[in-house]
Image (cartoon, rainbow, N blue to C red):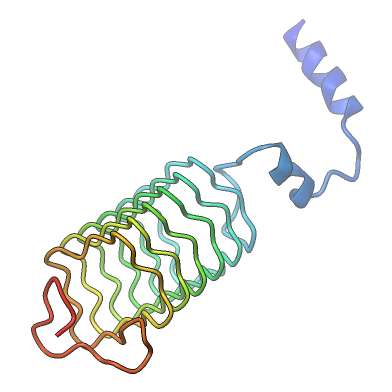
Length: 170
């Protein structure tokens, strides 16, 4: 009986249901890593996402704990309240990303581009942001306690944090 109902439902779906239409229905945590993917509230812990293009992806409340995002493009992603603890995201591009209330505790963001990103209430506790670009980023109530900002370009786009900039840009 259940198989018959599933078959009937499948017949009622339009034949032209594209991935874009499918994303409007809801998150598909098994979808491949492509621009605009909807991984809202997906568990992607330890996932290798090296050098992938996730431009415009919906990652809100996703768990990317220990994920490898090295060199990946996350331009204009919505990753509010996402968990990136211990993620490896060196040289990743988070330009104009919405990362409000995200958690990057102990993440490696060395050389990452966070220019224009919304980092309000984001947590970077003990994260490494060496050489990161924070030009134009919004930092209201951002937790950078014990974060390594050595060599990072500060929000004004001109000041570069000096050696031993731990927890503050010196």
